[in-house]
Amino acid sequence: MNTVAKLGGFGIGLAAVFTAALGLGRTVGHTPAAVPAPTHGGHAAAATAAGPATALPAGLQISQDGYRLTPLTATLATGAPREFRFQITGPDSKPVTGYTTSHDKDLHLIVVRRDLAGFQHVHPRLAADGTWSIPLAVPAPGQYRVFADFQPVGHDGLTLGADVPAPGDYRPVPLPAAARTATVDGYTVTLGGELTPGASSRLTLSVSKDGRPVTDLQPYLGAYGHLVALRDGDLAYLHVHPDGEPGDGRTQAGPEVVFHAEVPSTGAYRLYLDFQHDGKVRTAEFTAVAGAPISTPPAAATATPTPSGHGSDGHTHE
Image 1 (cartoon, rainbow, N blue to C red):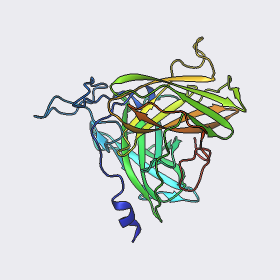
Image 2 (image 1 turned 90 degrees about the vertical axis):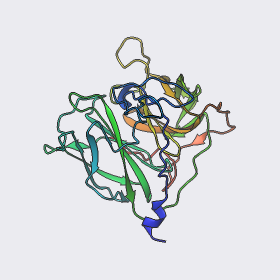
Image 3 (image 1 turned 135 degrees about the vertical axis):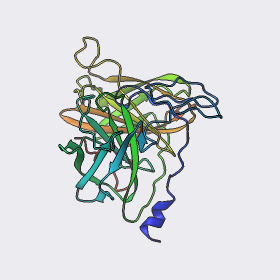
Image 4 (image 1 turned 180 degrees about the horizontal axis):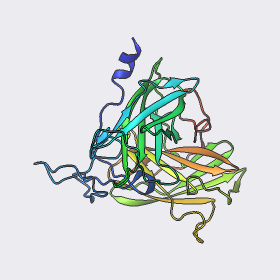
């Protein structure tokens, strides 16, 4: 079977319920049939005979409000990094060159395979002609989703997504089981709280090393932590930021980083926490199930990277 055939049927179904959240991911609402929710951010879709106007989940669209994500590189590299290039075109069909800085960057690029493995959070460079570029390699072949999270000047924030393949022998891996702890690079991160559909959920992530709480987390992109959540199946996108900010006189530099997130539907979500300590950014990964309490397993979930697994140590952060 050739690569196209192996990749062609993977993860195409896009469900229509997800509420995007705070901060970098910008707030985007959704009104599912069973869980009413307000529409936020001014991005409501047109009303239909089936019901009132709603907004699609963040990251499921390649274009919105006249803005479009256009990959200029057809495939992603495995092994040695290769330049990945793309543009954001505006309502005038021209490349956008004016952006509003959010969390120290004009655009945040999230890359993840459709089985939720191989997560990366990187920051490309913008050329004068509106082309974004970054040397990029993914750990293994497969169909990847790239998310561009940005705010054009004079517009609300947007998150657009596109599929880009990495050719080769694709071997999907199962979603790891829900767990309360994850380990990465000698650190243990513990997740407290539950994802409750239709309500704001308070999530606390506590960082320790060698059994001792880490109380000197370093700011990364203007915060002590960044949390991305992707729903299993359609990769609906949620990016939240923690309570408070460094230097505000009340926010402690660890060990706890508190987030608030809202999801309207039950289902499994993969959570990716970026945090910085000793001058290095690390990513801890969790699986959480909205609507079902997470039991505490007898052993920690390990984030050891493998060529096609869900490990976190080897992520690139730029």
